[in-house]
Image (tube, rainbow, N blue to C red; front, side):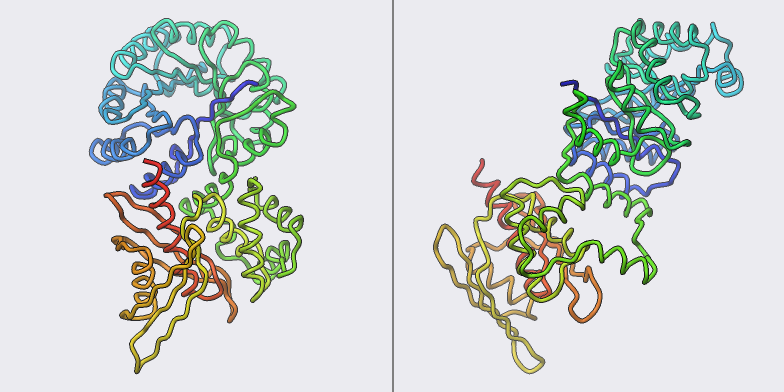
Length: 460
């Protein structure tokens, strides 16, 4: 089975992401196990290096790659920004077509070959891992392209990317082109394909079946779509002899989060007619059988284990006892019930009393290791009382870092989602809960976070 390297270019898109957005997108990409997170060249010498260093501090599994090569100082700037990265790479990206060399790089062919040797040698000395990218490979003269690849590899490039930025080739032609260049490269060859004609995924797939070792993808933008390529490998990879490291069970949810951050959420403001049609795709009632629930979960793009599917089914039936579960409710249930650690504490029952003339009180019963545990407390409001009651049962008070509640559907029977972050030992643990009762959602979110803390403490 050939494992394809997935290099994500979402943060190289022309859209201007904020500092916080860049960090959140990188965190999400690390979560789904992309192999490489690509970043654009260092342009703002104050803000960009700070962003790369901050991002590198928590990206430990993926390679952090910064583009360079456009001018004499770009390699040094990239290397300095990558100083904190655990796995760092400088991406030397240069035009090799006659027009690109003449009008973008202002170099003749021989001068370009000399420059490639010079800049790759410098990058190798500063970062160790260097990738050479021909940004307009399909428009270059093939003999010169081969010479340029050879020059880069001899100077220390550990990988090469062939780009079709103009979408000028059909899939079979592109795959054959990549094979010809890769035969003489002697290092892993990646491909980056424009989706101008809607053929990026097909070009990338045929290239991967042939000589290509990796594919450049993104969420949004004009290259191969991350979710589409991942789905294709997941559905047909076994037959094609291809695989990736991607965490496919949570990939679609993560892609939606990135789309939301990038302002491309397709259902952000749908018309009433479209919204009704979308939500009508999934409608689960309390008596929904396991097959129907499994089919609905698969339609959202999740591939859950039998254990996670059982947890989701239980939650679906619980919520569906009060209202029909549609697409957005089901996605929130998957986020809160599946892909989680084993539950040390499980919610059995709760009673909350509150009003403007009485102090809020909470009585909560949990189950842990087969034992029933009870907690009672008074608080400054029903949420505070509930959390204090939980603390009395668990026997520990965690620092509350963040707490949010929101309705994920509309109407009087709206399903509420609660997000909570608890701090323990300097680390943050997030929990999510879903219920038609927002107090119930908050309690479930708290327990979700606590179970993660307990699980990690027991594993040490």
